[in-house]
Amino acid sequence: MIVLTIVAVWWWRRPSSRRPWRLLVAALVLFYLGTTPMGSSLFMFPLTRGLTQIRTREEARGADTVVILSGGGETTRAGGVVLTQLSSASTLRVLEGARVYKLIGARLAIVSGGIADERVELEPESRPMADALVAAGVPAANIALDVLAKDTFDHPRTIRPILENQHVRQFVIVTSPMHMRRALAVFRKAGFDPVPSVTLLRSDHVQPPPFFVPNDDSQLLSNAAIYDYMGWIYYWMRGRV
Image: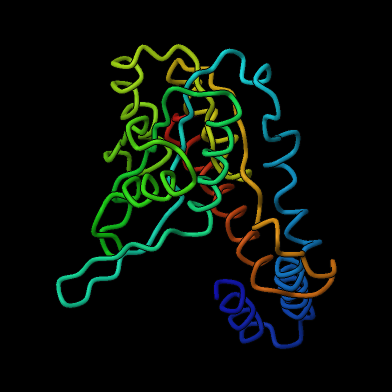
């Protein structure tokens, strides 16, 4: 909308100029690329380069705890009954957290996420994530909830009391590939040195479409990457990273 507004005003002020047309074509090409696997991969590359899942207990560097950061959800209420649907990002984080928990033989899983948006959420994101974690094979007795964190900057502060109370010295942090670098930067600035393990980008039974075919999944991934770029800018301006 911003680009279209600029183009419209530019054409109105200078109807003979070819530059508004060039800007419009460039915006359309960029938007098209962002909806394809090729374009979304380019958008994500600077954020995800070098990040992987841990595959052995040795890679966990002695961690005995998994910290899973929330990735959004949506609450629906009807007739006094409340149900929460996890976003695909939160679901993938739960599954990766469960995998890492079993891989390293962890004694504790911490799910961190409060009510990030009161317009669409009526309960902390960590609660349905904890239920999903139990369904994925993690004992409920070994799950701790952090229901206070509202954003990435909150996580280190709100899980610190849990880590200290449980005498956790090292832990694995689980989040989405685009989000991991910013999360690590915030945790390290708070004095932690977690081991990263990123989620898959999509369910492993879903095959990505051909590189040049537009699709909803690629657009969502591009949106997530752009969101995190803006998050980096905002956190840098606020001195959070």
